[in-house]
Amino acid sequence: MLGRVHSIETMGLMDGPGIRFVVFFQGCKLRCGYCQNPDTWNIKEGKEVSAEELLEKALRFESYFKKSGGGITCSGGEPLMQPEFLIKFLKICKEKGLHTIIDTAGFGKGKYEEILKYTDLVILDIKHIDSKGYRELTGGNIDEFWNFAKVLKESGSNLWIRHVVVPGITDSQEHIQKLQHIINNFENVEKVELLPYHTLGVQKYEVMNIPYRLHGINPMCKERIKRLEKILLSV
Image (cartoon, helix red, strand yellow):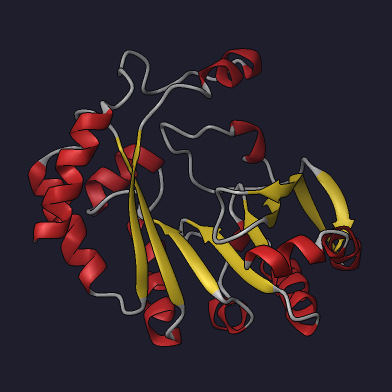
């Protein structure tokens, strides 16, 4: 079985605990206004690779995983867009005793129960808190996110939650309070991060001749993020 991969990071430090082998899966249904990697959208692009090839590459760094408490992170794009390949890869990673993470927006093609069976930690990117805002920001239907969230809750998986804060879109006090209510519905939440919107990926849009929908919005103030974090923790 072959999957499509955009790229690999062999010594990742920002994609879960410890040093991680990060696989960026090709393909994503969402078109988030702030997406840093529009080159991952088209699932027909990327490099074809087998799960066994990926594992072989990852095992070269096994000693680093063990020393640091790291492992494998499946990111994207959206790893849930290639469910059969993802399951195969996660399964053989677990057979080797490797710690596994999926970094996801929860917007894929199903088989979520089986995927989570081989996943030690989920990093869940909550894009927006209601259907209108979700549609405007991502172009997607929030119902698909809730389909994944339901299975995730039932799985009892350990969970990190991330949310990108965009000025004028997801930075109001009311928005953050509603986000907290959503987070409270999950169990096993180990960590919550508010990530400041930035414009570091804009150049890719210019190169690919894709309109950047958040043009004119300034990067998020880090001091504002700290104030919103206090609101998030106080609800």
